[in-house]
Length: 293
Image (cartoon, rainbow, N blue to C red; front, side, top):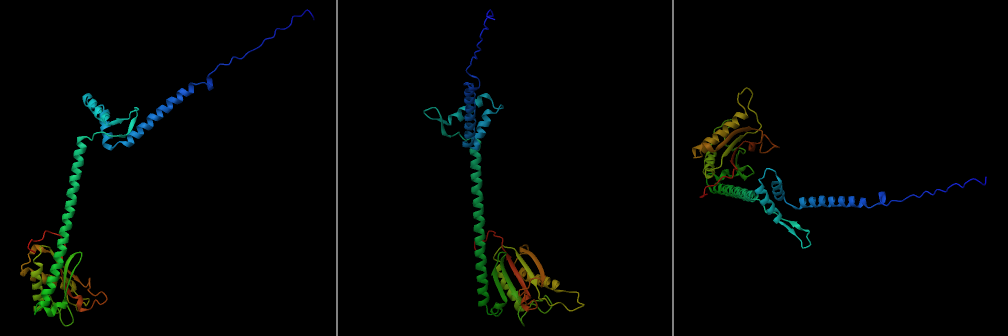
C-alpha cells in the first residue's frame, strides 16, 4: 500500500468574463431609443405649432411632383422662417410665409363677409322702414276716419293694427249696422265709401294685398244651394272690386279668400255679428318704399 502513488489534485478555476447581461451594450441601445423618441415628440410638437397653411407648404415642398428648382426655393423659404437660439436649439415659435393663394382666399372671404353683413344691414333697414310706414299709415288712416263727418260714425267698426304679417284693416259688422245686405255680397253705400277711403291710403304703398271674407256661424236655410263659404268669398271679391276702382292695380292682389266661420273674431260667440267682417291685409314684404312716402 505504501508503494502506491498519491492521486494528483486537480483545481478547476472558473474564468469570469465581464459584459453579458450586466455589460454596457444596453446603454447604447437605450440611448438610441431615447434619441428616436425625442425626435418623434419634436416632430409632433412642430406639427402642433404650425398652421394649416404651413403644413400645406411643407407638404408641397416634399411632394415628388414638384420640380427640383421649386423644391429648393421652397425649402429655403420655409427654413428661413425657423428661428434658432444661440445655443443651437430651435426657438419656440415657428413661422413660415403664407402662400399667395391663401392670402387671396382670405381676402375673398373677408370681402364676402363684408358683403353679407352689408346685405343683412340693408334688409334690416328696409324692414324697419316698412314697419314705420305701416305704423304711420295706420295712424293716418285712423285719424282721417275720425275727422271725416260721413265716416266718423263708423269708426268703431274699423279695426286697424300692425301684425307680423303686415298692416291689417278689418271692417266689422255690428248690431243693426252691417256692411253688406243680409245674405248677399251687396255693400251698403256707407260701407262702400269706407272701402274707397281705405283704398286711398293703401294705394300709397307698393306692398301686395290679401283680402279675406268672414261670416258668423249661422247657416243658410235648408234647401239653398249657397253657403257661408260662397258668401264670404263673394264679399271679399266685392271689396277687391271697390279697391280696384280706386286705382289699386290688379297685380297687387296676392289672394282673395273666403273663410266662412272658421276664424271668428269672437271665438266664444261665433254667432255674433262682429264675426261678419272683411279683412284687408297689406302684406309685410320689406320692399324699397317710394322716396316721397
